[in-house]
Length: 128
Image 1 (tube, rainbow, N blue to C red):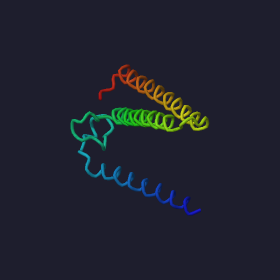
Image 2 (image 1 turned 90 degrees about the horizontal axis):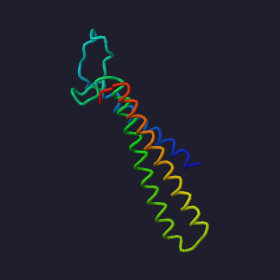
Image 3 (image 1 turned 45 degrees about the horizontal axis):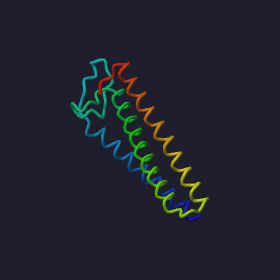
């Protein structure tokens, strides 16, 4: 029961910090012309490539997919270490094979998704 409350406290703390930094970005955002016909982007840092909401969304999706790819590679390494350390134990070897297989599937899905996002970005002519 103590472990559940600790997890809830950690989730709350991380959520609060994320919200704090998200709101702080609004305070430091540069001004934009509301008569320009475009939505004003509070994350616009002046020439960093995030001029529209679509740019911000594409950038966020690319960042998330990149993190998924990094974690997949990490789990491939973890599965390899588990397999090496298994020392002939069939259950541990099966667990390691399952970890590696799942990580490879995750990496492949991440790469395909990243390609789809880049393709959509090019088709829709979204500048980034």
